[in-house]
Image 1 (tube, rainbow over the protein chains, first blue to last red):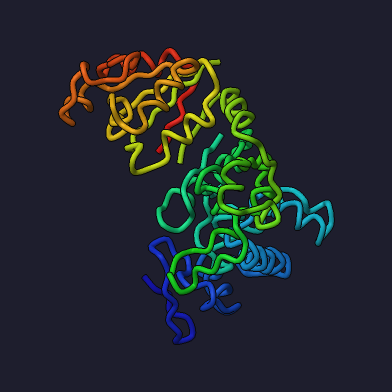
Image 2 (cartoon, rainbow over the protein chains, first blue to last red):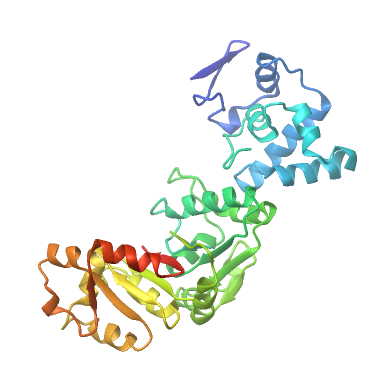
Length: 110
Length: 114
Length: 102
């Protein structure tokens, strides 16, 4: 499977997750989101950036609990709720945000 | 309790056990992870799998804490037999002797073996 | 709480038997299956280890696996009990938990 964006081809798995983390570009994230009717805001980017940093460090996606805690620390405790993340990423923060971040589908994905 | 007895890259056991631990952590289970026999090699520092083309999941053990998993046990006899010390490992662990490990195992509701 | 330990590897190829005997607490049971049944045979270099451990652990061997490898009950170390598949199930049911020494 593959995605074509601005004439560039990106290999993905059958569920649309990028197969090569390093092939990721912000344009790709925007295009993936647009395809699903989402316009990425600063709040979305904060989550996507954190997911990519965490993956580089640990080789896996963070747990939702970890994601909620970190977002709270960076963006304020009023945003430290999984509800907030689900507003940004209605299909689930792990599943959808990881896809836009160019990560593989997370283990124990919720 | 998950019991790891295999070295990390020769078979798929270690990676599978890690994934099971992460899933159990996501579902708020009270997880203990044991490293004994060659399982202690899963935690050694400076693993580099780039050339063999497999995932270097050794750094993922440091994420276990984020998944709510804090009970990591390494068997002393296995560590010593391989010339290793806790300073050679990527995570903080509790070192227990074989006798204590047996007792911990007895207390578990479920033991998953890898 | 008594635990059942299963061993399915030959004691001459892997350390599963040694690891089990090192860590298992007294009162538990050891069931030898597949290539693990070679540890139940009399006259081998591991037989002493098994005999000595009988003071604290009960030993069983799976009959079909023994017979498949050409051994009979008469060739077993004294004290090793032979079970069939339903005996295997009974052992699992009658112990608190199971550790498989793979």
